Length: 342
Image 1 (tube, rainbow, N blue to C red):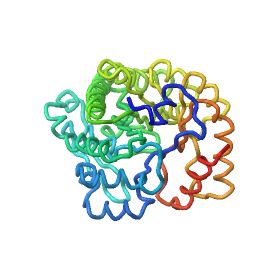
Image 2: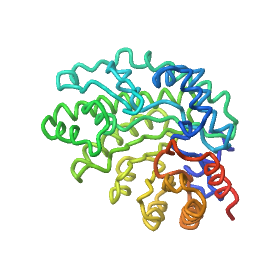
Image 3: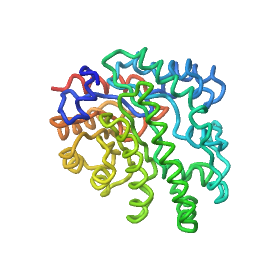
Image 4: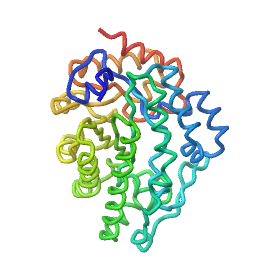
């Protein structure tokens, strides 16, 4: 593993100051160059599956801001799409799927899974060849619980009521779905690593809507299985877990899943983040709306994070993805604030 990629050092437990920095959704609609490439692509999925264009948009924020890490441009829903489920994206509505039934869960077929995802693997190979040597390349997948919520409801919802009801009413079928998603997500991450990813991240965007019992069964156990399978093949590749909204569950999530780094959302108190940092690297956790506003709100947020966490293993990031209305000048200011800190 290369020795000059600062983010890898941090994930090994070393402190670096100023810390490495990247942003979730850093290739996205706040960038005019992204919007132009997205227009040329036609559909969002076409953009995800076209290696030329996917490489182009992945590199855009690296070329503009010089982040320490680059994350593959794709989407968490390519996994159900590769399993044969219909997935489409509509402007203003987000992802839309045909809700899956119990019978369809039993019939999920992964025979052409990797064939369907070969364009993504090709994108990773090209990215590793084109990125600066010091830039860490991050692959990713969605956690089984979060992906399952979209497969069951057919769209995003505010509290994932359809998936929770389904899980309680059809517990056998639901756990079968989580198992299928865990196995295929692990295989997906392994292929990304083989194509050149240095680190992989597992996004569990909806972990915060579950009670204790469900959090353990639906979030922790499937992610632990993904980690186990990936480590069996690539034991030294760091894995970041991001269970957004996990609150008091963050520490046990890291302990029970075995993830290397822990992504923190912006609601995690910095005193709690400091405690979590004792067990390994943490990533985050600037409120994305501070970045939208800029000025003192941004400076205060950056300063608080660096003061609280800067003497330990920290990857500076947002507490969730950057929003489309964020001014580019504010991103430039954030990078300068982090990198000029002393």
